[in-house]
Amino acid sequence: MKTFACQCGNTLHFENSRCVSCGRDVGWCPSCKGMRSFTSTGTPAYTCDHCQASTVQCTNYRDFQVCNQMVAVTTTWEEAPAYCSCCALNRTIPDLSIPGNQEKWYQLETAKRRLLYNLDLLDLPYASVFDGFELPLTFEFKDDVVEEDGQVEKTFTGHADGVITIHIREADPVEREKNRVAFGEAHRTLIGHFRHEIGHYYWQLLVQNRREEAFKVVFGDHDNPSYSEALDTYYRNGPAPDWPQRCVSAYASMHPWEDFAETFRAYLEMISVLDTAENVSLLLDEEEKESFAGIELDTLLRHYEQLGIKANELNRAMGLPDLVPEVFTPAVADKMRFIHRLVKTGRRMKRAWGMGQGAAGMG
Image 1 (tube, rainbow, N blue to C red):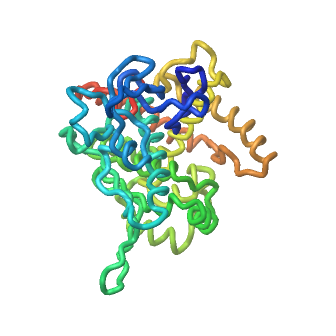
Image 2 (image 1 turned 135 degrees about the vertical axis):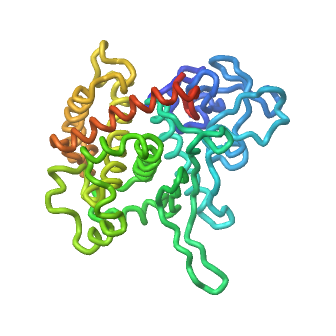
Image 3 (image 1 turned 90 degrees about the vertical axis):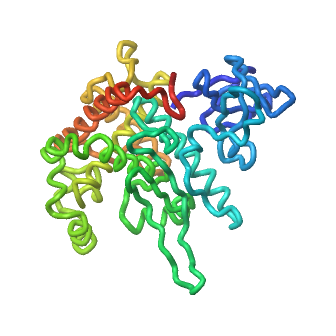
Protein backbone atom coordinates (compact mmCIF):
# COMPACT_ATOMS: atom_id res chain seq x y z
CA MET A 1 0.00 0.00 0.00
CA LYS A 2 1.30 3.42 -0.92
CA THR A 3 1.47 6.39 1.38
CA PHE A 4 0.61 9.85 0.13
CA ALA A 5 1.31 13.47 1.07
CA CYS A 6 -1.03 16.12 2.42
CA GLN A 7 -0.91 19.68 1.08
CA CYS A 8 1.02 20.56 4.24
CA GLY A 9 3.62 17.83 3.55
CA ASN A 10 2.45 15.41 6.24
CA THR A 11 2.19 11.71 5.34
CA LEU A 12 -1.31 10.44 4.60
CA HIS A 13 -2.30 6.79 5.03
CA PHE A 14 -5.03 4.81 3.29
CA GLU A 15 -7.44 4.93 6.25
CA ASN A 16 -7.07 8.67 6.99
CA SER A 17 -10.06 11.00 6.84
CA ARG A 18 -8.28 13.99 8.35
CA CYS A 19 -4.67 15.16 8.38
CA VAL A 20 -3.35 14.83 11.93
CA SER A 21 -0.93 17.70 11.31
CA CYS A 22 -2.94 20.50 9.67
CA GLY A 23 -6.51 19.24 10.22
CA ARG A 24 -7.51 19.29 6.53
CA ASP A 25 -10.22 16.91 5.36
CA VAL A 26 -8.71 13.88 3.62
CA GLY A 27 -10.13 11.30 1.23
CA TRP A 28 -9.50 9.19 -1.84
CA CYS A 29 -9.75 11.33 -4.97
CA PRO A 30 -11.40 9.47 -7.86
CA SER A 31 -9.77 11.82 -10.38
CA CYS A 32 -6.08 11.63 -9.48
CA LYS A 33 -6.34 8.22 -7.76
CA GLY A 34 -4.75 8.89 -4.40
CA MET A 35 -5.27 9.91 -0.78
CA ARG A 36 -5.43 13.70 -0.90
CA SER A 37 -6.31 16.67 1.25
CA PHE A 38 -9.44 18.61 0.24
CA THR A 39 -10.61 22.18 0.64
CA SER A 40 -14.29 22.86 1.28
CA THR A 41 -15.94 25.28 -1.15
CA GLY A 42 -18.51 26.37 1.46
CA THR A 43 -21.10 23.95 0.02
CA PRO A 44 -21.10 20.16 0.27
CA ALA A 45 -18.52 20.20 -2.54
CA TYR A 46 -14.76 19.90 -1.94
CA THR A 47 -11.82 20.69 -4.20
CA CYS A 48 -8.92 18.24 -4.36
CA ASP A 49 -5.76 20.07 -3.30
CA HIS A 50 -3.73 17.93 -5.71
CA CYS A 51 -5.67 17.95 -9.00
CA GLN A 52 -8.36 20.60 -8.32
CA ALA A 53 -11.17 18.14 -9.10
CA SER A 54 -14.61 19.07 -7.74
CA THR A 55 -15.97 16.30 -5.51
CA VAL A 56 -18.41 15.50 -2.73
CA GLN A 57 -17.96 13.06 0.13
CA CYS A 58 -19.42 9.59 -0.36
CA THR A 59 -22.71 9.43 1.53
CA ASN A 60 -21.27 6.77 3.83
CA TYR A 61 -18.35 9.13 4.53
CA ARG A 62 -20.54 12.18 5.13
CA ASP A 63 -23.30 10.52 7.18
CA PHE A 64 -21.68 7.55 8.90
CA GLN A 65 -17.88 8.07 8.79
CA VAL A 66 -17.31 4.50 7.63
CA CYS A 67 -15.85 5.50 4.24
CA ASN A 68 -13.19 8.01 3.20
CA GLN A 69 -13.75 8.18 -0.55
CA MET A 70 -14.85 11.18 -2.56
CA VAL A 71 -17.24 11.17 -5.54
CA ALA A 72 -16.64 13.28 -8.63
CA VAL A 73 -19.21 16.04 -9.20
CA THR A 74 -20.61 15.74 -12.71
CA THR A 75 -23.24 18.51 -12.64
CA THR A 76 -24.27 19.83 -9.22
CA TRP A 77 -23.76 18.60 -5.69
CA GLU A 78 -27.54 18.23 -5.33
CA GLU A 79 -27.15 14.83 -6.98
CA ALA A 80 -26.43 13.51 -3.47
CA PRO A 81 -26.85 10.98 -2.01
CA ALA A 82 -23.80 9.92 -3.96
CA TYR A 83 -21.98 6.69 -3.25
CA CYS A 84 -18.38 5.97 -4.18
CA SER A 85 -17.76 2.97 -6.40
CA CYS A 86 -16.67 0.97 -3.32
CA CYS A 87 -19.89 1.60 -1.37
CA ALA A 88 -21.98 1.12 -4.51
CA LEU A 89 -21.09 -2.58 -4.29
CA ASN A 90 -23.01 -2.96 -1.01
CA ARG A 91 -26.41 -4.66 -0.86
CA THR A 92 -26.72 -5.19 2.89
CA ILE A 93 -25.10 -3.26 5.73
CA PRO A 94 -25.19 -4.03 9.48
CA ASP A 95 -28.21 -2.99 11.55
CA LEU A 96 -27.05 0.37 12.87
CA SER A 97 -29.67 0.40 15.63
CA ILE A 98 -27.55 -2.20 17.46
CA PRO A 99 -24.74 -0.70 19.58
CA GLY A 100 -21.29 -1.46 18.20
CA ASN A 101 -22.43 -2.24 14.66
CA GLN A 102 -21.32 1.07 13.19
CA GLU A 103 -17.75 0.40 14.37
CA LYS A 104 -17.94 -3.11 12.88
CA TRP A 105 -19.19 -1.63 9.62
CA TYR A 106 -16.25 0.78 9.61
CA GLN A 107 -13.83 -2.16 9.98
CA LEU A 108 -15.59 -4.07 7.20
CA GLU A 109 -15.47 -1.10 4.81
CA THR A 110 -11.80 -0.48 5.57
CA ALA A 111 -10.94 -4.08 4.72
CA LYS A 112 -13.09 -3.98 1.59
CA ARG A 113 -11.36 -0.83 0.31
CA ARG A 114 -7.97 -2.49 0.76
CA LEU A 115 -9.21 -5.53 -1.16
CA LEU A 116 -10.42 -3.38 -4.06
CA TYR A 117 -7.16 -1.43 -4.05
CA ASN A 118 -5.32 -4.76 -4.57
CA LEU A 119 -7.69 -5.81 -7.36
CA ASP A 120 -7.15 -2.48 -9.10
CA LEU A 121 -3.40 -2.73 -8.61
CA LEU A 122 -3.55 -6.05 -10.49
CA ASP A 123 -6.07 -4.57 -12.96
CA LEU A 124 -8.54 -7.40 -12.38
CA PRO A 125 -12.11 -7.04 -13.65
CA TYR A 126 -15.11 -6.48 -11.37
CA ALA A 127 -18.21 -4.27 -11.54
CA SER A 128 -21.45 -3.57 -9.72
CA VAL A 129 -25.01 -4.64 -10.54
CA PHE A 130 -25.50 -1.20 -12.11
CA ASP A 131 -22.86 -1.82 -14.80
CA GLY A 132 -24.45 -4.69 -16.68
CA PHE A 133 -21.47 -6.94 -15.92
CA GLU A 134 -21.85 -10.70 -16.47
CA LEU A 135 -21.01 -11.49 -12.83
CA PRO A 136 -21.57 -8.32 -10.76
CA LEU A 137 -19.72 -8.11 -7.46
CA THR A 138 -21.93 -7.49 -4.41
CA PHE A 139 -21.26 -7.38 -0.67
CA GLU A 140 -23.55 -8.25 2.24
CA PHE A 141 -22.51 -7.56 5.84
CA LYS A 142 -24.89 -9.49 8.06
CA ASP A 143 -25.45 -10.92 11.53
CA ASP A 144 -27.50 -13.93 12.60
CA VAL A 145 -31.23 -13.14 12.49
CA VAL A 146 -33.50 -13.97 15.43
CA GLU A 147 -37.03 -14.69 14.21
CA GLU A 148 -40.17 -13.72 16.15
CA ASP A 149 -40.55 -17.31 17.36
CA GLY A 150 -37.03 -17.27 18.78
CA GLN A 151 -35.50 -19.37 16.02
CA VAL A 152 -32.10 -18.19 14.83
CA GLU A 153 -31.35 -17.91 11.12
CA LYS A 154 -27.61 -18.37 10.86
CA THR A 155 -25.50 -16.20 8.59
CA PHE A 156 -22.40 -17.73 7.05
CA THR A 157 -19.42 -16.00 5.51
CA GLY A 158 -19.16 -17.12 1.91
CA HIS A 159 -19.61 -16.46 -1.80
CA ALA A 160 -22.49 -17.32 -4.14
CA ASP A 161 -22.86 -16.09 -7.72
CA GLY A 162 -20.99 -12.83 -7.18
CA VAL A 163 -22.42 -12.09 -3.73
CA ILE A 164 -19.84 -12.06 -0.93
CA THR A 165 -21.34 -12.31 2.54
CA ILE A 166 -19.24 -11.48 5.59
CA HIS A 167 -20.61 -12.24 9.05
CA ILE A 168 -20.16 -9.05 11.06
CA ARG A 169 -18.78 -10.95 14.05
CA GLU A 170 -15.57 -11.25 12.02
CA ALA A 171 -15.18 -7.50 12.64
CA ASP A 172 -15.05 -8.22 16.40
CA PRO A 173 -11.37 -8.90 17.23
CA VAL A 174 -12.24 -10.96 20.32
CA GLU A 175 -14.59 -13.28 18.43
CA ARG A 176 -12.17 -13.52 15.54
CA GLU A 177 -9.29 -14.53 17.81
CA LYS A 178 -11.46 -17.17 19.51
CA ASN A 179 -12.22 -18.68 16.11
CA ARG A 180 -8.60 -18.45 15.04
CA VAL A 181 -7.50 -20.50 18.04
CA ALA A 182 -10.45 -22.90 17.78
CA PHE A 183 -9.69 -23.70 14.13
CA GLY A 184 -5.91 -23.77 14.57
CA GLU A 185 -5.28 -21.00 12.04
CA ALA A 186 -2.00 -19.14 11.77
CA HIS A 187 -3.90 -16.00 10.76
CA ARG A 188 -7.58 -15.06 10.88
CA THR A 189 -8.04 -11.50 9.74
CA LEU A 190 -10.93 -9.49 8.36
CA ILE A 191 -9.07 -8.64 5.17
CA GLY A 192 -8.15 -12.33 4.89
CA HIS A 193 -11.85 -13.25 4.66
CA PHE A 194 -12.32 -10.74 1.84
CA ARG A 195 -9.29 -12.07 -0.02
CA HIS A 196 -10.45 -15.68 0.36
CA GLU A 197 -14.02 -15.02 -0.79
CA ILE A 198 -12.90 -12.92 -3.77
CA GLY A 199 -10.93 -16.02 -4.80
CA HIS A 200 -14.24 -17.88 -5.13
CA TYR A 201 -15.58 -14.94 -7.15
CA TYR A 202 -12.69 -15.10 -9.61
CA TRP A 203 -12.96 -18.89 -9.86
CA GLN A 204 -16.52 -18.42 -11.11
CA LEU A 205 -15.63 -15.45 -13.35
CA LEU A 206 -12.34 -16.63 -14.87
CA VAL A 207 -12.17 -20.43 -14.43
CA GLN A 208 -15.68 -21.88 -14.54
CA ASN A 209 -16.58 -23.06 -18.06
CA ARG A 210 -13.33 -21.53 -19.30
CA ARG A 211 -10.27 -23.15 -17.71
CA GLU A 212 -11.64 -26.01 -15.64
CA GLU A 213 -9.46 -28.70 -17.20
CA ALA A 214 -6.29 -26.68 -16.59
CA PHE A 215 -7.54 -26.04 -13.06
CA LYS A 216 -7.98 -29.77 -12.39
CA VAL A 217 -4.39 -30.49 -13.43
CA VAL A 218 -3.07 -28.17 -10.72
CA PHE A 219 -5.70 -28.26 -7.96
CA GLY A 220 -7.51 -31.56 -8.51
CA ASP A 221 -10.97 -32.61 -9.64
CA HIS A 222 -13.58 -30.35 -8.04
CA ASP A 223 -16.39 -32.70 -9.05
CA ASN A 224 -15.00 -35.82 -7.36
CA PRO A 225 -15.57 -35.92 -4.47
CA SER A 226 -18.38 -33.41 -4.33
CA TYR A 227 -18.00 -30.30 -2.19
CA SER A 228 -20.50 -31.55 0.42
CA GLU A 229 -18.73 -34.90 0.68
CA ALA A 230 -15.35 -33.22 1.05
CA LEU A 231 -16.73 -30.85 3.68
CA ASP A 232 -18.13 -33.73 5.75
CA THR A 233 -14.83 -35.61 5.51
CA TYR A 234 -12.82 -32.54 6.53
CA TYR A 235 -14.86 -31.80 9.64
CA ARG A 236 -15.01 -35.49 10.58
CA ASN A 237 -11.34 -36.36 10.08
CA GLY A 238 -9.53 -33.02 9.99
CA PRO A 239 -7.14 -31.83 7.26
CA ALA A 240 -5.22 -34.22 5.06
CA PRO A 241 -1.99 -35.31 6.83
CA ASP A 242 0.17 -34.21 3.89
CA TRP A 243 -1.36 -30.73 3.52
CA PRO A 244 1.90 -28.84 4.37
CA GLN A 245 3.58 -30.39 1.31
CA ARG A 246 0.87 -29.46 -1.20
CA CYS A 247 -1.38 -26.74 0.22
CA VAL A 248 -0.97 -23.21 1.50
CA SER A 249 -3.13 -23.95 4.59
CA ALA A 250 -4.87 -26.83 6.31
CA TYR A 251 -8.30 -25.65 5.15
CA ALA A 252 -7.04 -25.60 1.56
CA SER A 253 -6.77 -29.39 1.69
CA MET A 254 -10.54 -29.70 2.14
CA HIS A 255 -11.55 -29.33 -1.54
CA PRO A 256 -10.03 -27.92 -4.76
CA TRP A 257 -12.36 -24.88 -4.58
CA GLU A 258 -11.09 -24.02 -1.11
CA ASP A 259 -7.52 -24.75 -2.21
CA PHE A 260 -7.95 -22.20 -5.00
CA ALA A 261 -9.54 -19.59 -2.70
CA GLU A 262 -6.84 -20.02 -0.05
CA THR A 263 -4.09 -19.83 -2.68
CA PHE A 264 -5.74 -16.70 -4.11
CA ARG A 265 -5.78 -15.20 -0.60
CA ALA A 266 -2.08 -15.97 -0.18
CA TYR A 267 -1.35 -14.47 -3.61
CA LEU A 268 -3.15 -11.21 -2.73
CA GLU A 269 -1.31 -11.09 0.60
CA MET A 270 1.98 -11.46 -1.25
CA ILE A 271 1.07 -8.63 -3.65
CA SER A 272 -0.06 -6.39 -0.79
CA VAL A 273 3.10 -6.93 1.26
CA LEU A 274 5.39 -6.50 -1.75
CA ASP A 275 3.51 -3.37 -2.84
CA THR A 276 3.99 -1.87 0.62
CA ALA A 277 7.66 -2.84 0.72
CA GLU A 278 8.26 -1.54 -2.79
CA ASN A 279 6.66 1.80 -1.97
CA VAL A 280 8.92 2.30 1.04
CA SER A 281 11.96 1.20 -1.00
CA LEU A 282 12.57 -2.00 0.94
CA LEU A 283 12.57 -4.51 -1.82
CA LEU A 284 12.52 -4.37 -5.60
CA ASP A 285 15.33 -3.28 -7.88
CA GLU A 286 14.63 -0.28 -10.11
CA GLU A 287 14.19 -2.44 -13.20
CA GLU A 288 11.59 -4.54 -11.38
CA LYS A 289 9.35 -1.64 -10.39
CA GLU A 290 6.52 -2.28 -12.80
CA SER A 291 3.08 -3.87 -12.67
CA PHE A 292 3.27 -6.88 -10.35
CA ALA A 293 1.37 -8.97 -12.88
CA GLY A 294 4.24 -8.28 -15.31
CA ILE A 295 6.90 -9.73 -12.99
CA GLU A 296 7.65 -13.44 -13.08
CA LEU A 297 6.06 -15.39 -10.23
CA ASP A 298 9.40 -16.90 -9.19
CA THR A 299 10.82 -13.39 -8.73
CA LEU A 300 7.84 -12.32 -6.63
CA LEU A 301 8.06 -15.45 -4.48
CA ARG A 302 11.80 -15.03 -3.95
CA HIS A 303 11.40 -11.46 -2.75
CA TYR A 304 8.37 -12.38 -0.63
CA GLU A 305 10.19 -15.25 1.07
CA GLN A 306 13.24 -13.08 1.77
CA LEU A 307 11.09 -10.32 3.21
CA GLY A 308 8.98 -12.84 5.11
CA ILE A 309 11.98 -14.35 6.89
CA LYS A 310 13.08 -10.92 8.11
CA ALA A 311 9.56 -9.79 9.05
CA ASN A 312 8.86 -13.05 10.87
CA GLU A 313 11.95 -12.58 13.01
CA LEU A 314 10.87 -9.04 13.86
CA ASN A 315 7.40 -10.27 14.82
CA ARG A 316 8.84 -13.07 16.93
CA ALA A 317 11.01 -10.52 18.73
CA MET A 318 7.77 -8.77 19.70
CA GLY A 319 5.91 -11.97 20.53
CA LEU A 320 3.60 -11.62 17.53
CA PRO A 321 2.48 -14.25 14.98
CA ASP A 322 4.56 -14.65 11.84
CA LEU A 323 3.71 -12.14 9.12
CA VAL A 324 4.23 -14.84 6.46
CA PRO A 325 3.37 -18.25 7.96
CA GLU A 326 3.06 -20.05 4.61
CA VAL A 327 5.73 -22.38 3.24
CA PHE A 328 5.90 -22.24 -0.55
CA THR A 329 6.68 -25.82 -1.47
CA PRO A 330 7.01 -26.71 -5.19
CA ALA A 331 3.36 -27.86 -5.22
CA VAL A 332 2.17 -24.60 -3.63
CA ALA A 333 4.36 -22.56 -6.01
CA ASP A 334 2.70 -24.33 -8.96
CA LYS A 335 -0.69 -23.26 -7.63
CA MET A 336 0.51 -19.70 -7.12
CA ARG A 337 1.82 -19.78 -10.71
CA PHE A 338 -1.65 -20.78 -11.93
CA ILE A 339 -3.13 -17.79 -10.06
CA HIS A 340 -0.45 -15.50 -11.51
CA ARG A 341 -1.27 -16.60 -15.05
CA LEU A 342 -4.98 -16.22 -14.31
CA VAL A 343 -4.42 -12.62 -13.19
CA LYS A 344 -2.78 -11.86 -16.52
CA THR A 345 -5.75 -13.50 -18.26
CA GLY A 346 -8.13 -11.41 -16.17
CA ARG A 347 -6.37 -8.22 -17.25
CA ARG A 348 -6.72 -9.19 -20.91
CA MET A 349 -10.40 -10.06 -20.42
CA LYS A 350 -10.98 -6.72 -18.70
CA ARG A 351 -9.59 -4.88 -21.71
CA ALA A 352 -11.61 -7.07 -24.07
CA TRP A 353 -14.76 -6.21 -22.09
CA GLY A 354 -13.91 -2.51 -22.44
CA MET A 355 -13.79 -1.96 -18.67
CA GLY A 356 -12.01 1.01 -17.14
CA GLN A 357 -10.36 1.26 -13.71
CA GLY A 358 -12.34 0.09 -10.71
CA ALA A 359 -13.25 1.54 -7.36
CA ALA A 360 -9.79 2.48 -6.19
CA GLY A 361 -8.07 2.38 -9.58
CA MET A 362 -4.40 3.22 -9.57
CA GLY A 363 -4.69 5.39 -12.68
